Length: 220
Ligand code: 5RP
Image (cartoon, rainbow, N blue to C red):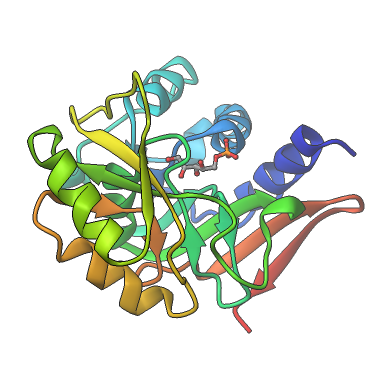
């Protein structure tokens, strides 16, 4: 199975875990795109979705799934999204697709978080993937200097603006052994809108696509 087959297997298995007749939160990325294709087949079972990016919103509407705002949905029983890395505690690095701010907002509204990923994303320690940090463009160099003082190197994602009009710094060199602490420390820097560590909003369940199909994994 190639990586896309594994993503698709995870996405299709995850559909069977969704509650019927409820609003759900839907993330962003290539794995989620497989999910949206699968949701199109069961669209009448879903009341609607909160989308974490303009691209996801466009795809959901094309699939015939009503898109609602966070305010219209209220709390969500389930948020479902991919990850760039996920550890054995189901803490994640996200934001490779640049949608991390809205993803964290929607994750924070949800009772449970189902992560869908191929097996290359499941790691024992987070940090090989550069950590995306979404910043207010006005404060970008101040944030980069603050991260430098924390021992990190921050590279601007050139030519990219998030759906909310912010820039992204891809950050390497941080020790992510304590993801909860680091998530909070980075968010204390003035000008940081959000960072891609999802430790406070870790996944509840991981649906991992591998060579033999998809398996459901809980936090260790
Ligand atoms: C987007 C994300 C994605 O979930 C993450 O980048 C994984 O993407 P893909 O499913 O394409 O591998 O956080 O902001």
